[in-house]
Amino acid sequence: MVIPSRNANTTGAAGQTKCFKWGECSLWTKDGRTKVEVGGAPFSVAELTRVLRSITLAEVARPSTWTPADRALRP
Image (tube, rainbow, N blue to C red; front, side, top):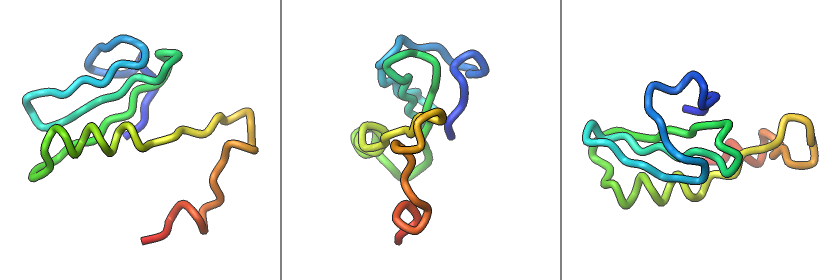
């Protein structure tokens, strides 16, 4: 899930990855404006952290940062 930090039910510092006992890990973007969440059993904290760190968010105002759907949605 990707949400604005101001709407998040947990807090964290910009650029921080934080994992919670309920099986969810969150990453706050470097500017602190956006929070990315991943979670769910049976994944370990190490695996969830690896997934979070592999995500690159596009910038809405810069189409050059967007990934075309046919490339992004490959199995």
